[in-house]
Length: 409
Ligand code: FAD
Image (cartoon, rainbow, N blue to C red):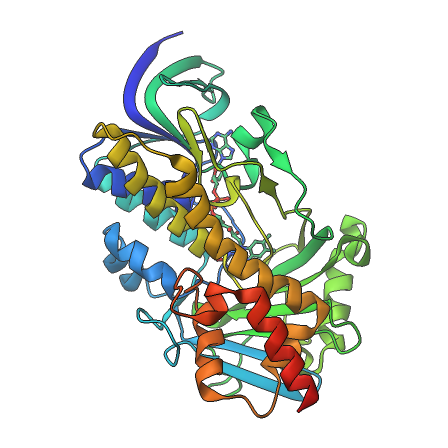
């Protein structure tokens, strides 16, 4: 078994791993990214939030993303029966980017890891991490596609393995999420919509007309395609593989707006199902390692927060690790875990109230106060760590109070 040594080993070349790799290279660290698949590969999570643009910019990836020609995005459009509510992310409480993109992740992820490689990160595709010996001098056991096993010594390991959740599984870090087990059925369609049929610059989030805890996404992509999916408790979508297409088609046709836009649009790939994706861990760090992106925590797709949290975690973990590698004593709980979870908890308060229907009441409330709408809009745009926003500083309390006032008015 051969051995090599680097500053940082990163498990996984998704958005969290790629941005962490590029930022570490900027600080002059040697980086090895181990990715078990070959890119391009399909991934779900196509609607970005504007907050993520700052991290792409800092990682030197923005120009490549802009030049790729993805669908521009400036907001979110919500639909429930005859009610609609459109949020424009440029009109928000927090400073920063108000626009972003809706991306085919196979292309997007390949661009990001390509940028990291250009900046000097070593990337090995088809290499799967099997075990990690954590501690002050961590070692990583790897196997390549030829079945050759080898070991890497590193000063630190970032687990950015997404739903692979390498370290949470190996180290038994997983804890209950407190959320019901939900699933999604999804595919891409050729929507063929004429200009003006819908606002392609916004994700459309539509609530099932009879079940407020069931919702759909329609994410327009470049080239006349759209991503479409339905999210519900797992039992609602639990159908055999052969029935997935008919089930998703019937669900889409049940929701009037989606039925009008894409009721008969042909699916461009087999309908996929993913379930039980919500995850939590006891802590996001330990001796010689930190968990990034979905490898740490994943809440729910409803507010498209996954990639933003992944990039925020990469940014914060790199800042923290750079100080440690420069000789500072670091309290990873105080510097990484607590501040990262602050924003995750903001999204959690929003997600929980989405499924009870309370947040939906607020989104469709007819007499919204403009300043409060801009605060809620800022969170929907991904600015879930900006504590000048009262809906970030105390999200649960503020949302509960607002709901009470709206229900009386
Ligand atoms: P990933 O993108 O999952 O990357 C992890 C990588 O690690 C993978 O390439 C994998 O092959 C690799 N890996 C795994 N195990 C190993 C191993 N042992 N060795 C080596 N490599 C390994 N987010 C949004 O921002 N917007 C959305 O609209 C959105 N929609 C979603 C819809 C659904 C139904 C779901 C379930 C999620 C959605 N998300 C969305 C979340 C989004 O998919 C994730 O948050 C995002 O992909 C996380 O990025 P990541 O870099 O942490 O992990």
